[in-house]
Amino acid sequence: MNLSKLLRNPYFHYGLFLGLALILTFLPTSFRFTKKNDLFTFKHPPQPVVVNKNKPQLSTNFYILIDNETNQILVSENENTRIYPASTTKLVTALTALNIYPLEEVVTISKDYVDGKVMELKSGDKVTIKTLVAGLLIHSANDAAFSLASHYPQGITGFVDQMNLLTKKYGLKNTHFVNFDGLHSPDHYSTVYDLSQIARIAIQNSTLRNYVKIKSMELTDIYGQKVYKVLSTNELLGVLPEVEGLKTGWTPEASGSFIALLNIDGHYLISVVAQSEDRFNDTKILLNWAKENLTWRMYQ
Image (cartoon, rainbow, N blue to C red):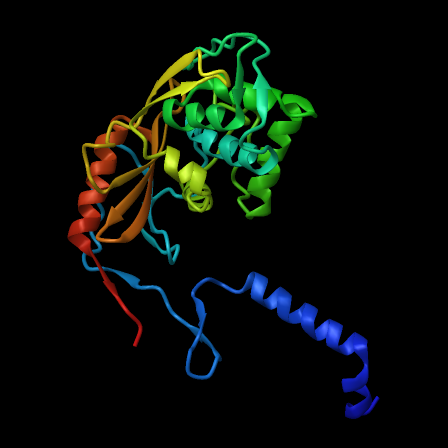
């Protein structure tokens, strides 16, 4: 087919339009149109530079600190060794729920769930998905996690399958879940690297990002009659201004874990500590190390 016939072919124009639409859909946000000639230009994010290569001294040998925008590992130890994630699991529980349910969908609580930390949901209570996600992320409420998972049409097993599909979608090969709340199981594992990537995914969701930085909140049932008072398990919120979330975890087998979202002069970092004897102090150490040893430079 010569060029003139090709240009007159309606399927050619349809294909061209479809191809352009796909390009625009998957184009990174750092690409922008220039006003001058409407050509695509790439705006490279600021690059973190580690000034001092000395590693910080933590109570654990399982940790990582990454730059959120570039995903560059700034400092780490045993980042790909399997650990038990405990309640940091609930970031994926929340993401899965936010992917499959409308926020205002109503859930009737099926039973009193009493394992671990709870927000005291009672059988018969009617609450929204949004309320359950808030209780899950702020209070680390296991009964909220159970209610989100058991509400799934394919049941709890189907919900956990969706959690694993989510991590598989993003290529996280060292993470596997067997439950929705992080209670201990030998087959329930992750790595600090994978948890840092889960955090990067999580903070792209505005609902999730908003709840993880709330210190305390009063939630209600759909009638506004029953109140559930929830308090963040993140002891650094409101104490260190750089900390804007994210999720804690603890079991006897996993010891302490904590994923933190850190804002240093507008540059966002994600830290993960696991198997920690003092998860919050270890996070403080990583934060101070970053403030003392990092600079950012722009590409010319």
